Image 1 (cartoon, helix red, strand yellow):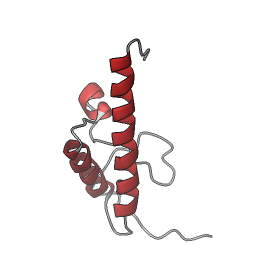
Image 2: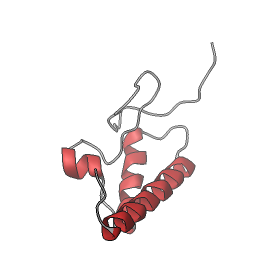
Image 3: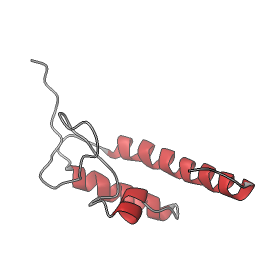
Length: 91
């Protein structure tokens, strides 16, 4: 994306602040035993409260509001009720 106007720049700054705050709050909210779908839903609520929309969901029809990768997934993890966070154990 190329920012061409001051208005676009200010919009990008607002979006960046909303995303940063959402990620920070999602991280603090996350606990062992939660599903990635629960965390994603919380993120959706935070974005909506800030008047923001999820780009992956809105633009690309991604099946979640955020990409949450766990363990061997390296990118674009799809939030799921079946993926539940567990305590990490070193082998």
